[in-house]
Length: 211
Image 1: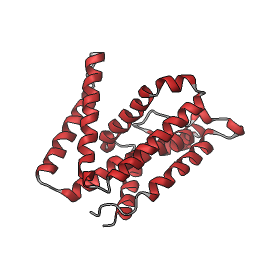
Image 2 (image 1 turned 90 degrees about the horizontal axis):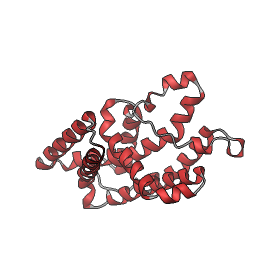
Image 3 (image 1 turned 60 degrees about the vertical axis):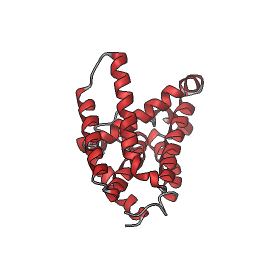
Image 4 (image 1 turned 180 degrees about the vertical axis):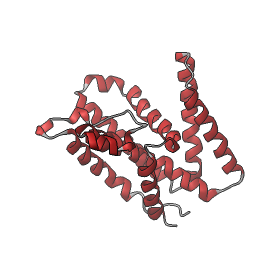
C-alpha cells in the first residue's frame, strides 16, 4: 500500500479512536512531546505574549511531525515506535522519581507497549511496524486537531461538547490564547492554524515506505 493511502487510513482511525482508551499510549507520547517543548522553551514562553508562546508550541509540534515523516522515508521508520515509547518511559521514570508518585495506568500502558513492540521486532513484522510508526507520527496531528479545533468547538456548544468525544483523554487546549484576536473566536483561529500546519504534513506523507 502506498504511503499516502496508509496515511489517510491511519488519520481516519485516529480521529475515530482518539477519544477512547485504545489510543492512550499515543496520548502519553504526545503529552510528553508537548510538555518537553514547554519545558525547553519555558524562558521564551514566559517572556512572550501568551498567543505568541502558544503559536511557538504549535509550530514546534508541527515541525516535529514533519521531521518524523522525513525519518519514515528511511530504514529508521521501523524504530520510530520503540524510540517514542522508550523516551516516554524514561520521562515517566524521571517524573516518578521527582514527584514520588506512580501513575499506575501510565506505567502499565508503557510496559505493555514496550512488550508488544519487542514481540513485533522479534517476529520481524516490518509492515506492522511501519503502520505503528504512522500511528505515532500522525498522533501529533490528532493532538493538534483536538487542541486547536475540537476543544474550542466543544466549549462553544453543549451539544458539540457531548458529540466531540475526541476530547475525552486530552486536556490540552491550544486555541484559547487566540480567542478574540481580530474579534474572531478561538475555533476560527484553531481551524486556520490546523489547516496551515497540516499542509506540509500532507506534502511529506507522499513517497514514503510502502506497507
